[in-house]
Amino acid sequence: MQDSSKPRQTRRSLPMALLRARESVMEEFRPMLNRHDVTEQQWRVIRVVAEAGELDATEVSLRASILAPSLTRMIKTLEERKFIKRKKDKSDGRRVILQIAPSGLNLIQDVSPESSAIYHSLEQKFGIEKLNALLDLLDELIAGK
Image 1 (cartoon, rainbow, N blue to C red):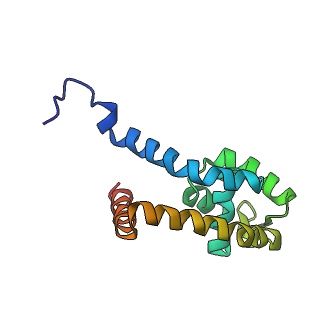
Image 2: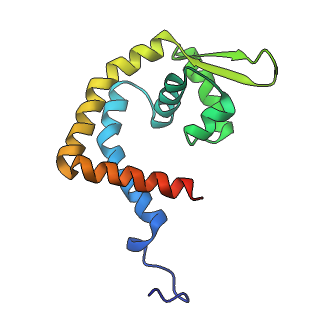
């Protein structure tokens, strides 16, 4: 049992372990994103918008785990690069609706083979059952907040 008067060792700290795991995984994906001149955050936004088809910017912020002020700046860049389209919500002019643009879909198609190869490598290294179990546990952790 952990002595509550002392801080938990960082090696067994859940927040620290999640950050280290994220960095370990992203080391595999960053070179691919760099080759396509897309940041991690931009890629998350593109993926979330493409998956949804059309989505309110607030929901994109939540699903992509990006703070709203950062997303606001990013929308401009992604729109200039023609990866996404922006429009005002017809029922509420304050809301911004984002949708994937043809260039965004092309980027996803270009990146998909490399991304699939990285996922395949991770599956080979750790086993698909372990990765699925990890994803299920993370989903439970997120849902339990």
